[in-house]
Amino acid sequence: FTHVLVLDADAALVKHSLDILGTIAKDMEKRQLDVFLTSEDWLLNGENRINGGFLMTRNSEWSQHLFQDTFRAHVVGPGGLRRWRIGIEHQECSSNEQICL
Figure 1 (cartoon, rainbow, N blue to C red):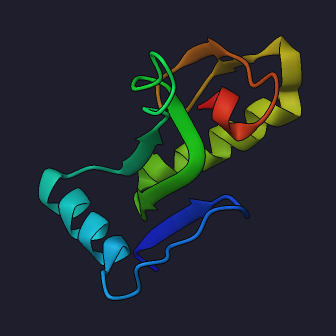
Figure 2: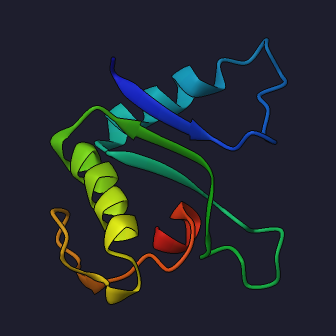
């Protein structure tokens, strides 16, 4: 597989005539991005807040490490994960993946 899509159960891709996932994948490739995230721009000051309901990653070593780190941080819990493979230090996941990201 080339990409991984994480989509909330209450989210939907409804405009079937538009290949939005293909468009995002091409844009990620062109810009050499490993991850595509959405914001919560409908909230006051939410444009810099990650929304975990739609996350698309390329199949890359960095993306694999992101998922492994996020899982490990959940397992470790409030104590926090000291060293993330993606370069973050001393970060905890106190709740869901959105909080973790």
